Image (tube, rainbow, N blue to C red):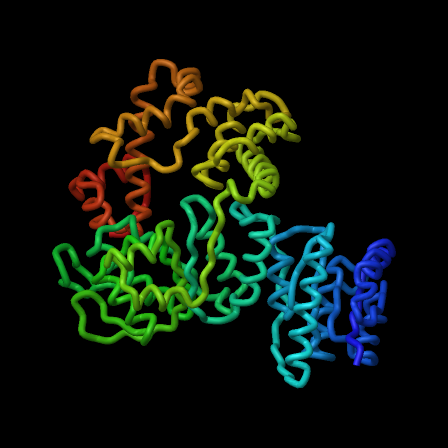
Length: 483
């Protein structure tokens, strides 16, 4: 029996082009420009594979996809679009698409995708299944969104769509600054747990004992300064999703407790005997090789395999250069709004300069450069001279090398201050010393409070100062905190 391919697109040129592409592929090609007519063909002709354009007038491609799946759950559907948005790829896979491809088409890849979709359809033609998935809202504008239309990122969006609704544990690997927490949030936002809590914990930010209490909580009197029972993140997150960043920095003792949560969804608070049962999905991330850590016996092998049920690898920015213009546009718009600027465009030579930069700090570095350049931009066009000093200062500066930074972090602060020092001088003439010192102390206090979940005892220990001193600084900088 001859295989059948249905193509739905409102552009007659696209239909003609695809008919030519699949001519001679030993399959019957059916062309349609109207959604309802395509659905009737699915009912009467039972095609094996369908290609739907997302942006159809009237009934959208997503609606056709869902209705087609009700008619024939086994139909292999490939969604296409010229709008390379994150949510399109995720939505397509969540609603049961076999694949998602973007325009302009790479015809060889499209042929390959159709062939694989056909094989899948023929293998599963007799298998019927149902999956009830509610229509999700399209992604709204947000301060922090993950963006990318490179081939690597499209595959990631497709994978998010496939795994988001499951409760499978996820491991996200990638260099610092590549957007691991944003990917974790994308998985959470598209999961059935999206109306339950999402909590993030940086495992590298707290000492072992504090991290244990942060995750699992503690009983009154469990240790010095434990004046009351504390509910940990796992209890707070019951029914939701917890994101464990820098999981490779977790101690072996805490790894053992985490493994038990993964296996049994239960644990005890520090100093407690009662077993606490929870229902929490775990998403973990690391910028180091856990395989190497397992070989070095600093990371448990059984935990490693438990974590990587689903494994994502976020490529560094230098390997997805086609996403850089999208990110530039996103950050310029964001920081223009923040600082009340009217930057209308980015000069072509500015984009060229940014494309040539190595971006060792990845997206985080690009974001910081655009932030600083926006502050100092003097016109409605972002020019190379607005950001050259920041690029020079950050060249080769991926992460602070603490082993080489010295006890006083002189080199670190020099690199931070040098590109903005002239601006500080103009703004704070005569009070530079006081302003910079106050800003540094205020940032340290607020960062320590954030890392300690606003717990004064933990923050004071982290900073190495007395609790009274911390309280004095909190009052001075008007930062609220829990007792």
